[in-house]
Each structure stands twice: as C-alpha cells, then as structure tokens.
Picture 1: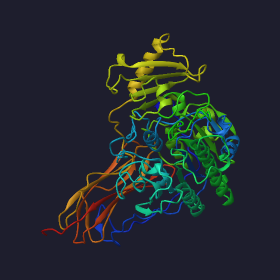
Picture 2: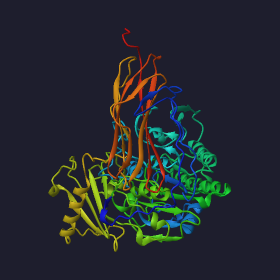
Picture 3: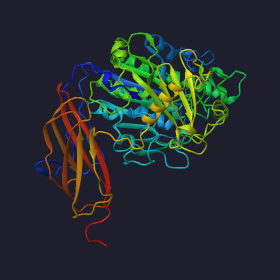
Picture 4: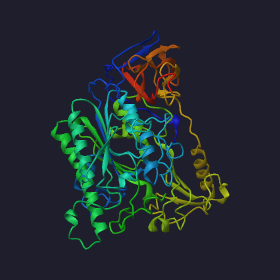
Length: 603
C-alpha cells in the first residue's frame, strides 16, 4: 500500500534467541576454497530446532472467495459459522480489512510478499498464458520466518509457477519446507483431483477422494509434528471457490435452494469447521496460548457455478463481488486470535493483507525487508493501537478478462476494462481505463468515481463532480503507486546466473548475494556454497563481513568445476548466515538446479 515511511514504527516481539545453524551436506566452500562433502542430495539440510522463548506459532488460514458478509461475525444470517464467530468474539475483529486485489493470483502474491498490486510481481490471474511466477527478487513471509528457525508449511492452494519440482517459484523454493496441495489455479478448481503435490512429488489420487479432507489432515499433522518448536502454517483450502462440490449438503440438504447454493453454504460451513479443528488441535496439544491465528479471504464473494451470492447477502452492506474494485470485491473478513496474547475487540483501521509480512516478522522477532508496502499491525494485536502505523492510502489494481453478470452490472458493463482504486481515509476513488486500453491511457480518458465511505459504505453516491480536487489528488496517488518494474533492495540470499546444464570438466562461475534489506545492522555475515560431492569449488572473492549495515550486501563469486557424474539434475545451494544486533541468528538459503547430460568431449 502507499505508506508513510516517516511514521513507520516497528514492534519487535519477544527476546532474540540464539539458533544453531544446520550443517549442509555436500561440498561447502568458504573464502579458503572448497572441500568435498557427503554428496549431491536433492534437498538442503533442515534448519536446527529453535528455542521458542516468546515467539508464537503463526497460523494464517485463507479462504478462497469468501465474502465479507458470509461469516456470522460480519452479519451472515443463513450460513452457520460458529467457530469463526467465536474467534471473532474472543479475538480482534477487523472491519476494514482488504484483500490486495479482487481476484486470486495477484491477491495471494501480495499477501505473501507484502507488495501491493502496483508493485507486486504477479498482477493478474492466468488467462490464455502460463500462470505468473514469483521471482528471485521476491521475498515471502515464509522466507522471513524460516531465517529465524521457524518450521514452515503451505498446505492447500499455491498458484504460482509451472507444475514441476525444482523451479524457482515452487513453494519449497520460496521458504516453505513443506508443501501439500495444488500448484496450479486450474487444478485447484477440482475438489476430487487426480493428484496433489507433496513437495516435489506429484501424488496420484483415485479421483474419488475429497481434497479438502486431505488438506485438513495434513495441516493438523504438521501442527502436531512441530508442537515443540515455533512454526508457521499457511493453510489455504480451496473452499468456497466454485464449483460447489461437496460430499453432502449437510445441514442445508433440506433447504429449498438450487444444489449450487446448498453446496456453497456447506463449503462455507466446512471452512468454519476447518478453522475450529485447527483451534481444537492447538488446544489439545497445549499450545493455543503459544499461537496466533489469522483468518481471512483472498477476495470478495463469487457468483460462479450457479451460486447466487445475493441469497446469502454474501457482501453484506457492501457494493460489488469478486472482480469488482468496489468494497464488496476487496473488503474481507480478518480475525486475529491468540488467547493471552490478543485482547478481544474490534478495529476499523484500514488493513490490507499486505500487512501480514511485516506483522508476522515482528511477532517472530525477525528482520523484514524495508521496501515492502505493508505496515506491521503487531502493536495493534498486542493492545497498543496508537503504536500501529497507518497507511497514507491503499492501492488496488484489476486486469482480468473474465466476467460474471452481477459483477459486470456493478461496473456498468466495464468489468473487462483495466481498473484501479485508491482508498485514503474516508475517501475512495474507483476509475476505469477506456475500452481496450491499459494504464498508459491519458488520465482524461479514464472514467473516475469518488465515494465517501464514512457516510456511504455502499458506494451509492458518486461525488467526483463535486470534489474535483480530491479526485485529482487520488488519481495522482494511483499514478505514483504503479511501477512497471519495481526494483527491490537485496534481502536474504540471491543467486546470479546459473547455466542450464553443467558439463563435466568445464568450469563456470557463480555469484551469490547476502542482502541486508532490513532496518537493522547484521554482524558476522558469511556466504557459503554447497555443491555435489567431488565438484571443485573455489571462492574468488571475500565471503565474510564482520558488519553488514542496513541496506548493504555481501557478494561472493565462486569458480566451480563439475566432475564426471551420471546424467541427471544437480543442485547448488548458497547459504547466508548473520546475527542481528540483538544477537539473534539468521540463516537464508537459495538453491538452483542444473542438468548434467554428458561428460566433456562426449558425442
């Protein structure tokens, strides 16, 4: 979002613990040169178990297309959501929380990386093209927390990069130790899929197994397995996304509704049950008071597959649906629950889900990139609302060729046009590009609407004609928020160019960077490289730095000579370690995979 950097305050939760650093298998180099290790295993070593101290477990549960009004705590009257309602009563309920975009892929990219849709790498859903990928310049909240010893998992829907293992956009390459679920958006539309992914393996299913049950079981198992160490669970089930397929209609079987609506209601209730099962598992294991749970949705309610969102008043008092930039398309439920940590209450602070990355980092006592658009709400969660920085404005972008009738009617036939929105305090700008044109169209050709949310939450009265100065101000903010290529400060480990294939006996060079893109000084910084057993690795430049001030980097280059090995794929892993001024250990890593099809001189 568009933030006020001068007013930004960081809340550092808990004291910093000293973490042991795991030793990687393989050939490890330092500035004295490389030595052989144990071999070219496909996975890097696991991080050492971290002492919990006051760092809570963190659970983020994200619904798929759950509307603002589809939860009882936000006014729902027909669909039953007792477990989420209880969390809302016991925790902090946000009434002005926002998904970063009105459709899935850009919303989730922004949630993971803390960048709004004018800066994020993925800014639209995949249509007639490969789905968007995260890049080496992206840092997810999992990478931020894993550096501090958190065990990390994403279970459910991922939605980035090609469906194959070892590629840079795979969850295992983005800070998540464990992944179980769907890589692709289209695959995630199947509730009885022929396969799901477990890390880098495609696991065949019989096509008759209800995937949400598998996702739930895997999530609960992850919690149980890591109950004695701090963990991050990003749980992203596909309910209640269309189609409305369920094993049975449950309590809605006797309702005089079409089957699509019965199934949708049961999907919402099953999401509620999933949230309750997670809380019950935390309680049974005795770690509920060591955990913060966040529940939200990726965008507004859908009307696909025959579902009638108006039957359920799915958007509550708001205008719009999924794909609209009106409040109904982007305002989402958000509930924060943590017994003994988060006091019961309600907040109307405009809070985009881009705030998750810095918030999770603060709760974990982990450094975070300073060039994200999110602002930490950790002080708000812990009861100090005045210490939580507020955004100058929130920015939203929409470029999506799909259309549904209700959403198109709200946009007055402009649903397929590029659109953007800005919220600043009580004011909301929504504007549409001319038909067939993108953001480069001159401002005078855009149609702009202005609403005062404090008195018109339903966005029924367009005030653009009577407040031209405010329109111009918000248009300028929108223009400033969009950057074609958002350049990032280095953070964590980045690896430079790696050849697609290595040839035995033919040397090449590799460069890695350990970037301190945080606001804190790091000390005892070091870069190492692991390679397959027997490969020759020699550092060409310094690989240590006694002090790494904020905004600076350590860059190391190595000369690598592969040895004769069978054809296959091989991994190079760069590991960066450092300590913060609070004496907390940090460990970042990045892996690249390359093939080795032949030996030098072979035909």
